[in-house]
Each structure stands twice: as structure tokens, then as C-alpha cells.
Length: 162
Image 1 (cartoon, rainbow, N blue to C red):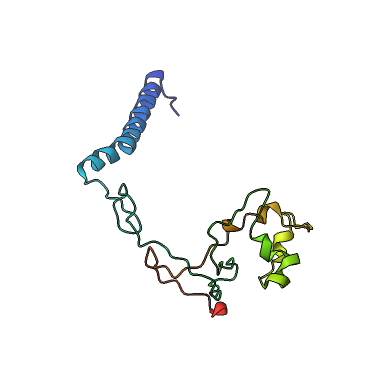
Image 2: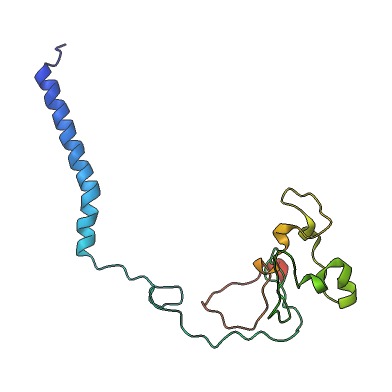
């Protein structure tokens, strides 16, 4: 078998380098050329507004006074707050929700007791007071409202929740 000469090896390497260069150039530069000839993509929000447009003025969400709680739509849904919370103060030193929902006050006030899950650490260790990770109620619980949906959907509660 004949060994390739030094010149033929250099020619093959040069041909391979040229082929790879052409392939890389086509990969990186061809999409830019195609994109320049196509119309720009028009982005919109889920509400159908232009992406840079400010949010439309709503009619304002009105939260009703105390009312019966709405049913939950999925198993792990945090309960909605069935009463007004305007002016409720929740800081690292004070939580207005605990005035009624703490286990020591719930019977007296008629409020729902805080779930036992709120007294556990991330590792499952039980605490004698509300866990710091569950202390800021409005991270999960929101006031219920009969507001019009911002975006249409076809969501149906799970069959076990009906």
C-alpha cells in the first residue's frame, strides 16, 4: 500500500478545513440572511396587547366583605381568604392573621385553624409555633373575588374536587 506523500496529506487537511469552514459559515450566517428577508415576529401578551403597551385600565377588583369560602379547584390549592384583609399587617415581628387563625384563638374567634403543615420545617421537624417559611400568609393565600378572568381559559376542577 502506498503511503500518502507530504503534499497529498496537506491537501487533504486543507480540503477538510475548507469544508468545515463552509459548513460553519452556512450554519451561523445563513439564518441571519433569511431572518433579514422575513418580516419581524410580532410579540403579544396573553391578553392580546402589544408587548410594550401598558396594562389596560381595569374596572378595579372589589373584594367583598365576609362571605362563605369558595370551593378549591385542585387538591393542594391553598384556601382563599373569604374576608377583607385591607390594612392587615404582616411583618417579621407581627402577623395580623394569627389574631384569629392561631390555634389558641380559633375557637374563640370562629376562624379556621392554621393547618398542622404550617408548623413543620422543610425537613419535617415539628415546631411549637408557625414555621418561618409559612409565616407570610399572602405568599400562598389570596382574598377571594368574583373578578372577571384576565385571560380566557378552559380549566375544569379535577374530578375528585367536584
